[in-house]
Length: 139
Length: 98
Image 1 (cartoon, rainbow over the protein chains, first blue to last red):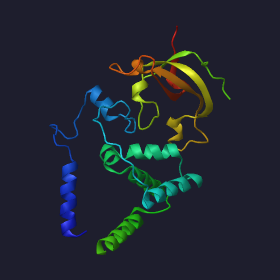
Image 2 (tube, chains in turn purple, brown; image 1 turned 90 degrees about the horizontal axis):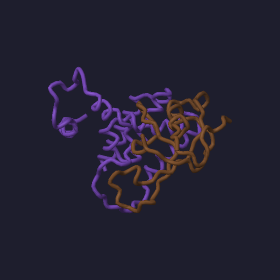
Image 3 (cartoon, each protein chain N blue to C red; image 1 turned 30 degrees about the vertical axis):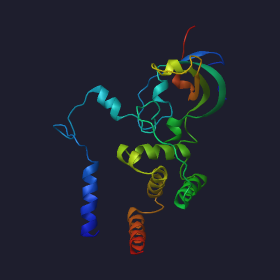
Image 4 (cartoon, rainbow over the protein chains, first blue to last red; image 1 turned 60 degrees about the vertical axis):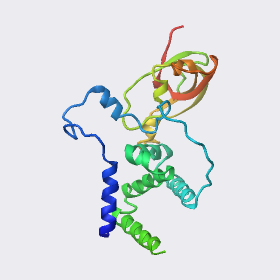
């Protein structure tokens, strides 16, 4: 990773960290209501307070439909099912769950199941991502 | 097929159980009272299906439950007869006498 990119990644990462820290970042004990809040299932957003959002139409992009098909094929070949995919999205944790695009959550879950099943390794996947990024940055 | 414990028209309350990692039973229906309006086929419960247990997971009857919106949202501003329907598996439901 180039120095410039490292610096920009670290800056963005710092901005994702909590703005307020407790005396201990990983406290020895927490109250029960904090436990309940922290273990809330991420996709269960119905009824949570929010502000009005503008609704706008957006066409599907190729990568989104390719992601959809990849996930369906993994299900068809028995690697997972739709409920495992939804769980994989919850497993991302709050920052990635809300930070990724909708199909970004799907494809990250798919990558994880491929690694979990031994069909691909994380370094193979990482090398491919780096190769594609380098190609796109050249353009 | 297990015989469904509840019949269409029965009044039920949704349990408020601790759920770790994954569930499909929404927060906003927990502890709320609704009416069974439809039976759904028996199926592997999502709490097991989510862990790759399509073959070995526990199967339960599913139900469509209808709630009054005023039951779900204390500050609901719509019409008093507005309703919402959702689904849950049998182990999430408890009978309400009435």
